[in-house]
Image (tube, rainbow, N blue to C red; front, side, top):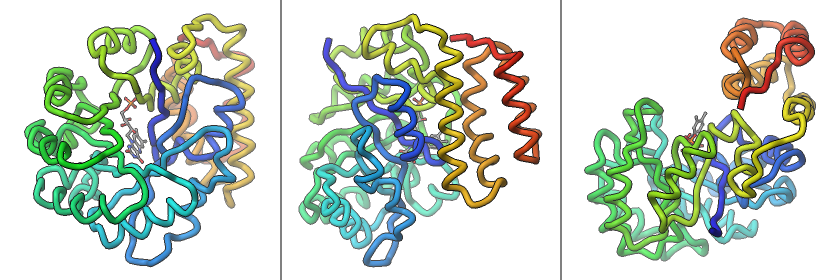
Length: 318
Ligand SMILES: Cc1cc2nc3c(=O)[nH]c(=O)nc-3n(C[C@H](O)[C@H](O)[C@H](O)COP(=O)(O)O)c2cc1C
């Protein structure tokens, strides 16, 4: 069975530093969708927003840049700028569930407005040199949003549609709605990528057995928790020599890389806490180390806790 595996965009997690460090230690991903770049009224995007997608920062893993916004006038120049940088496809974020984003009718907040989405596509698709891919949830509150949108999408030449079958208000609670996903698959003319809760080999196999027409899969949290997972899924390899040591080398390099880019210890510590929310779940009794790390206010103390954990307490449990 030949299929493609994509790293999901996760803002604050899967940036170019993570992607490059991952690639030096693990494998399995064919490409990544990069975390979103917001549109703005400025003619040129801020350099800080583009840093993550600069080709020189992305030689290890191919990427598709993602844009969040609802206004073609702002989206088009950014897509063109990304085309000038060599990106033949851009992804439009129609899934972000956060209320601050959604209330501005961006991300999943735009899903209850099919006419606005149609209007956006009508203006944008012919005006950009790139192919447009869409990453979407089922709806803001119900899957009815996507059932109304698919006939609209069918009228445009999209690259693909990446579906995370939850609603926006669900955030990450409950189960992905696979019945609704199946219905979307029947309705669409486009190539679909599945995304959501692929947390281990068996969850992948269940999905792959059920949705046999799907040839691309996207993994976010499951791969941050267990970076061996993409390789396990892609290459069928499921036993690793000393996974703890491999993970520790990866983690230490990740820490050093971030140490070089963050100006202050506070930012570095916050970033590491974000990672350990996920990393901790790969270890036996991981909640303990997560709590200890999250309570820490000083970088020095954090370093001591992590060092001690790897030396004494860490039991890889995947
Ligand atoms: C911390 C965090 C940040 C995220 N940032 C983005 C983002 O920038 N763009 C996007 O389309 N989705 C974003 N997502 C959603 C993920 O790409 C993915 O759709 C979601 O986590 C479900 O997949 P998973 O179960 O494999 O993690 C984010 C998710 C999390 C948890």
